[in-house]
Image (cartoon, rainbow, N blue to C red; front, side, top):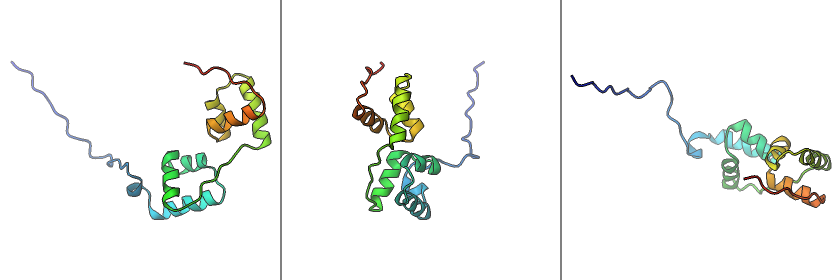
Length: 121
């Protein structure tokens, strides 16, 4: 006797995922996002708030004609980064804690004279 192969029906209780930003972010949400960014909200916070990648946030802002800002770290954040790096934390971990990019943390540490460790493989 041959075994019957059973095929499951696709799940219908989950809504289909939409990946295109213009399809999943309403114009009202984009306007809120732009206002928050222009008001000084850091990009990592916007990513969390709207569940959109940093690239997606920057794309939406660019499409809206918003001028990008380059935000460095405050003196106290740099002090904290120096301590964390000296304690063995990675640039990635420090940047996540400070809500900044790894390159911004690295640049700030180098400006303070911190010697970078070799990258882990």
